[in-house]
Image (cartoon, rainbow, N blue to C red; front, top):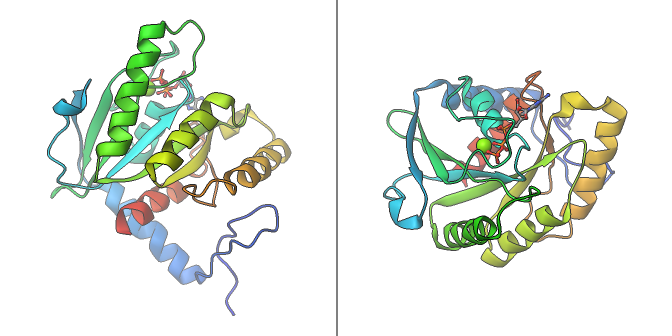
Length: 232
Ligand SMILES: Nc1nc2c(ncn2[C@@H]2O[C@H](COP(=O)(O)OP(=O)(O)OP(=O)(O)O)[C@@H](O)[C@H]2O)c(=O)[nH]1
Ligand SMILES: [Mg+2]
């Protein structure tokens, strides 16, 4: 048997990838091409009624405020400044949609962040309504990428979102961000812990993806995960 190109678990679990090295390389190349085409900001939707026609699969980026959602979208499409980023938590407050490919292949959706201190109560309420509506009512939503800061691991607010996703039966995958900020040994530990917890959730994809928008680590693999998500 060929060597597995990538093993899905750091903890010796049952998830393995049986792709040959050639198949793994072809998958990464297809994903690279998919993201190399034209990309454009489509619109901001503060409510569901402002969403575009559901004419293409969508992959949404969720996570605590400041976790790096907008930065990761920019890294994936290799365009600085496409999605707006900031040090101020709560920068993204609507669903921001980006068209990828011409003809349109799929859409990336930058979601408003949650869980920051000092968020006004009505903002939290609005977030919950918007996100719940979107998760439950969007048939073209292929997968949600739930971003988690590699330095902090899963927090209760993330678990709350995972609960919402499980309930809405939306497939999701956990992605660790800012991997450049910790040592490889610490990263391996967080990956294993996050993986162990995600296995308890039915809607969670078993593979955890560590990434850094700063160094580019894990970005090619994340592109391939997006390709997988829209191909099923
Ligand atoms: N070192 C490092 N910094 C990062 C990385 N990703 C994001 N950042 C920084 O983290 C901060 C927040 O990034 P954003 O992309 O604006 O975060 P967000 O999740 O979109 O935040 P909200 O829109 O408020 O929900 C910015 O200062 C980024 O430069 C990374 O991989 N490595
Ligand atoms: Mg943002």
